[in-house]
Image (cartoon, rainbow, N blue to C red; front, side):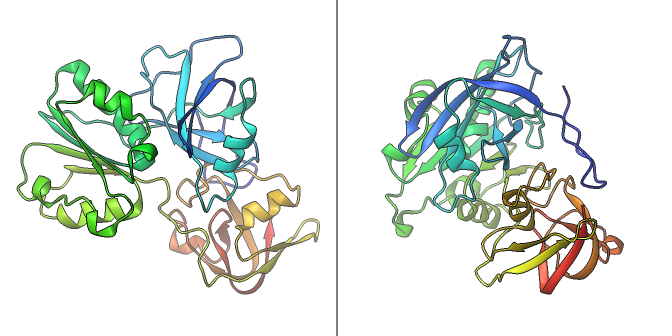
Length: 325
């Protein structure tokens, strides 16, 4: 079943499959691995390393998670979810409410981070960013393609799949723990100073990816690849509360300073449609009737910004707004 991402109104839908949690295991104190399968055990749509699925979490927030397992003829999807300290609900609800036997709505795999053909690879992972990188490392090793893996974490206890990466890739692995000390941040310059034939794939927290971008700017175009599920800062420190009114019903919902419009509507029991919830897919595009908007998405054309809003990330710039669901 394919996932459809459309850019029309809130009536557009993301096609989802009903899967169940077949198993869960703790990878670290803050990271849990979930194995998902069809209730009847049917084979699931195939995928390549770097692919992700969109999961409707128990709290109804839509979140994207990279797939860790082999994607050829899969009967399961395996994801790993880190409980974020500043979670907006998604990771917490997965940890607390997605137990074995729980049903979840899950999209078919999509891949914006696919491996290209190349003679050799440098894989860089930070923290939970190991999930797509791990699948890539297994694929490259199985195919006999040369690669190196740099995996940066805080400490051994915070390192998901530690035994797997050290056992499977010991000859190709650089494992670095900074112990939470900024002074011990891994120096990527030695690895990226001289461009070669490698393709570089990087996934991890923003500081790590920004550092890799900074020291790889002299590499040829198309050779450095990044995966980032959080390209938009949904909530900012200086955000304030405002009201949003639904034109068709005149119902007014207060959007707190630390919640998005989409989340506030969902909290109020209103039906919403979303996918990425990061301002990049267009699923939650909504007609704006009245008000001034602080547009934070990466989807709307300039000519659409006067009468549309992406309610997963954008907010009222001043005063209140009226929208049409």
